[in-house]
Length: 58
Image 1 (cartoon, rainbow, N blue to C red):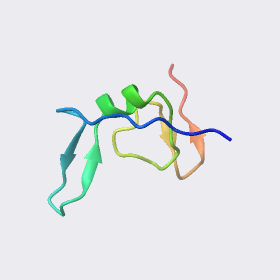
Image 2 (image 1 turned 60 degrees about the vertical axis):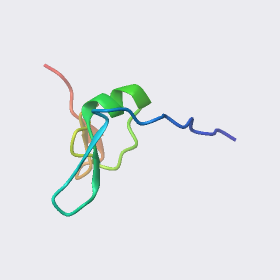
Image 3 (image 1 turned 45 degrees about the vertical axis):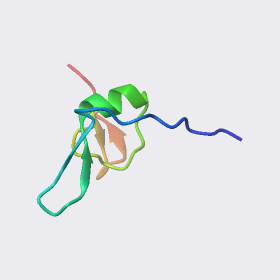
């Protein structure tokens, strides 16, 4: 069984949307070190939830 490590939040890891939701930034995603495949707004890994694929860099 694999456990995900808890990443402490720091300034710049997220912001609150006008609706009051926490939106994680690219900074946080890179610190976490992997893509969760949730279609995050600031995903630095290029994941496309609609096609369940990763966009390739040219």
